[in-house]
Length: 371
Image 1 (tube, rainbow, N blue to C red):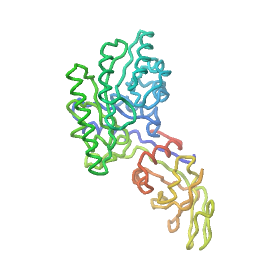
Image 2 (image 1 turned 30 degrees about the vertical axis):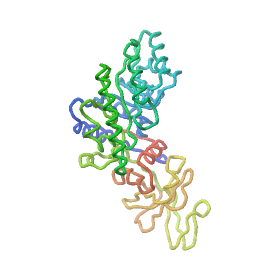
Image 3 (image 1 turned 90 degrees about the horizontal axis):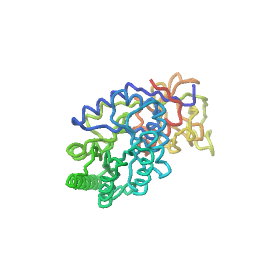
Image 4 (image 1 turned 180 degrees about the vertical axis):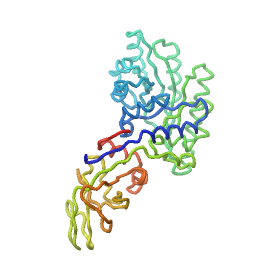
């Protein structure tokens, strides 16, 4: 048994994809976000499933991950969601990747490399409507698209933007998102007027699809970028999204057991002190394997189906849990950190993190088995 084992249910992934597909209007395509090693679920097996079920495109943030997808034999279109450095343009063309662009210098480098190879570079133009992260403001994106119309070595396949508040917490968040969507739609209308409208236009990620479905999908918007939803975690509540299920189940095991009398301590700097007779178990996971230090305050796992709270400080490679009163606990017993019985979004919320802040590092720190 490894220190932590992630069981990846690829059948659940297929089902989640089908649920999302049924929700989308005819003609709306899915760009499946597989960045960060498919959110920790394992890049290659997840991408093979995506190809099998006919996903339209994949999204990574790094060229290196995209190359891994190609080396796994997956031929789906791959969109690089983060900007590329000009030194990477040869890899983009070598592996038939689609770059997201907002820097004219990178576009020129792509064009030169494509011309040298007698090839065409595919791009999605990133439009900044308020995120202030990557991309060009609409007024600056227009001249770039005008320029690319006459550049035979570069083909604009799509144009997109990103919502700052896809997970709305209040009215101000919703107003911001509505403003961004309207700004982007006005930009698309201008592209149509100038005969520059590319084939693909997208605003919504998983949360954006649920929270702003009427505004962010349909009409001129014909692609969505889905990640967390397909891995089983709708970050915005909606009746139709309740049927998606977690794809990953993370388990570990009990490596040690200790009985503490009142007043006895355990952990670094005596971080746990027993107020009464307590039994604690030590798990061979910690912040070195992706379990956040704040798990010590509010974190819970399941032992024999019963909740066991974390106690004391999280170490590099260990976590202590309180198993007092749980019957039949023994060395080597399996412990569920998250999964269908203890969803990662609920586990993360208990310690004040978003689901991805907890889910991704913990999965990346585990041994993964897909099936």
